[in-house]
Length: 114
Length: 115
Image (cartoon, rainbow over all chains, first blue to last red; front, side, top):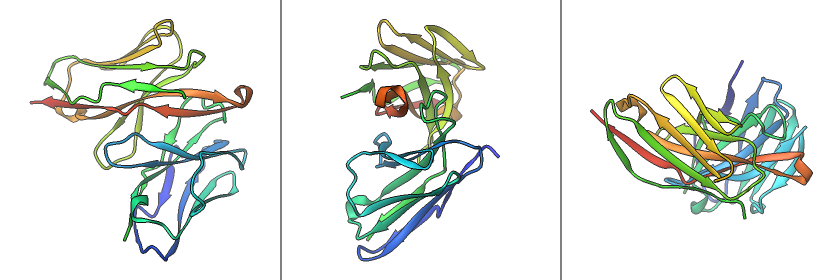
């Protein structure tokens, strides 16, 4: 299995809703990442988990809450989002936290906040 | 602030021509460099990685690295309409004494291959 699986592929949520994005990989990768990508912009790093521990938080607002239940799963919990949070949310994994061999990206979740 | 710079384009080439994409980076100690292809509305796909100075070829793609000039490029030979996409240059930045890396992306170059 050489894939990173993200669910759902599309999500529309209201500003008072609570929802979660899920990411799963079975490649034995030990680092996992959340990126946010707005249209015509490069991906922006949000969070990094190394060996299931949060190692980087790029000053992301608290309405985004990451969770890594085990080495294969990564969640992003969403609460009280704003319309400007609408974007493509990308999960990625790498073999080791030093990221020497690059990332494998999931297909992304297209989030729309209404 | 670590930066990765790319010409945003659009770069337009005729079918069968060579497309040349360029990237510069600011972090002198970076050791790993990547090119990702991203079709509109899709996630980035890794197409090339390069770690040493010089050229690395894979099919129609050639990556070139010059660490002294802090410059990475991607050549696409015999360009096809299916190559039309945004190409993202990414540089691995190490933190915490080298124990943790993450990729910093350039803004991407939009390539259009005309039939």
